[in-house]
Amino acid sequence: MRLRRFAIALSGFCAGLFLTLLVMHVASALPPACPPGVLTCGGSMTGGQSTPDADGDGYAIADGDCDDGNPLRSPGRQEVCGNFLDDDCDGSVDEEGCAQPGVVAVSDLTSTMVRQVSIDLQWTAVAWAGKSVVRYDVRQSPAAIDAVSWDTATPLTGTPIPGFAGMSEMYTVVGLAPQTKYFFAVRLVDSTGNLSGVSNLTATTTLAEIQPPSDGQGEAADRTPPPPVTDLYAVPGYSEVTLRWTVPQDPDVVRVALVRNAERPPLDHTDGTAVFDGLAAEYIDLTAVAGTTYHYAAFTYDWNANYAAPARTDAALLPLPGDGSIVSGTGGNGGDGSSTGSGTGTDAGTGTGADTGSGTNTGSDTGSVTYYLVSGGELHSFDSPTTLTSLGVDPGSVVALSPAAIAQYRRGAAVTIGGDAVLKLLDPDHDGLNNFDEVQARTDPTNPDTDYDSYFDGQEYTTGHDPLTVPSAPRVDRRLVDRMRGKILLQVERQGQAWWVHPVTGERYYLRDGKVAYQIMRFLSLGITSVDLAKIPRAGTTETGDAALVKRLSGQMLLDVENLGEAWYLNPADGKRYYLRDGDAAYWLMRYRSLGIMNANLDKIPIGSLRGKLQ
Image (cartoon, rainbow, N blue to C red):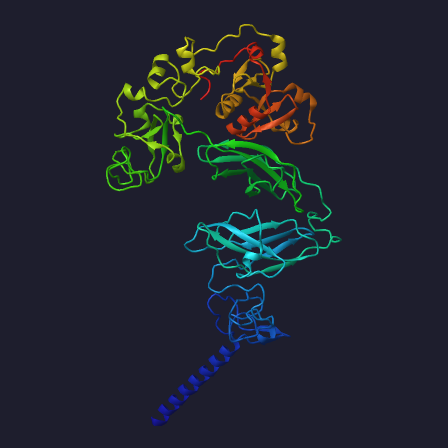
């Protein structure tokens, strides 16, 4: 029995020893476990033999790993500034291009296309916790750039608007010298002007003049500017000016520079304040000041910084809505009423606030919309629950104002809503008839010119004329009508009122403003296919198109029925078509592509009626 137990124990020990040796053998043949985030590790193959990777970073000593006991040091890693280590195993410590540890910064800035006078840069957008990144600050220098030398480097314009983290950003540097080394770096800028860390540094040498760029652009010998901007126009608001234009579809156009000058039209891209630089087709100028007329000029430029001839336009902020207007606004405005007392800053009681005073209003001004009446040059809130329906006001008659515009008004006492009394205070269309009188005259309280004859309803009503019917022409001159068909006429003796003469009927239609002009042009337009539209040359080009088709459709408003109903005007003066993007584009067109006419001649062309036809 003892011998049997001993034999069993001995056999168990041998089996266990065998299993242990087997596991050790298998384990020695397997690669070590990978560190977190490393998909493959365990050495590399050199000459068919596996070499160990002790730190699991994917590189062995034979592969150039300069510290196989530290997974944060290996070939291809980002060099970190200030740690006195050769992080990328290239034999240098803290060389140019290293990243600042623990600081938010772009880390993969690189050049993707090099030309004789231009370089394309690319990097990946990064997140900045707790910050709103509003722009990139890209710098250029003939020497290395870091935080100390940052201010001595040249800031570049036209940088892209920051995208979401992980997005690829691209930027083209122009106007460089051939065969010259340049250093570039980028920083993030937040909404309060704080700067992120300096990115990695990239250094690139431009091509020599004898080396043609692979994309055929950016040659030093190019001295020809690109095509200019077309259709530049300004849309003034109460606290901002919106600029829109068309960017030429030409590969030589890199960006558009927009310059503003308060004294004269800019002569070149340096003559004034640079307000925009990029490839967008719209810019909103929020720095315009009331009472100043601004001169704007837009310049396209190419890889060699050749600037095209300017496109120019002027604009000034609109005067604030006058008496009888209903305006809306948001934001904390304090109380209305006297300059003493207290308010909560919500227009709904008493407390403390910037606009001290007592008064009530529906809802606080902390994000909700509040309606006001302009009367006596002052802004009045309403002292009971207010809706547009209760005021009898069409939503289209309400003028939405920014907090900056609202702040320009004096504050008056709150008003009480009550039947005819409030109607007699309201004149949201500013036609000289309050809403009570509009009801009596059966005119449209949201349209200052109900019959679209260019005379306001109040003017006609108080002088005994019919505000609902257009006047008849005393004598129609058919020869004059034939000459004016399809043209836009500017009434030079009456404040530049604009009219369009229908090319078929010969009747003229009053283009009161951009909104009405756009409505009229679309209502009276002629449908056209995209194929036929392409046969008509576009403004700003040298195309000739189909001469017979151009002649047949001269003066027409054309609607592309196959392309989302885009509207165009075929100008009889030059045989070119102009894109009517919106009402503001239509207004620009009628102001700058019109023909002056005297009142005596205009009266010989009959007026077309649009009452009840436009929405």
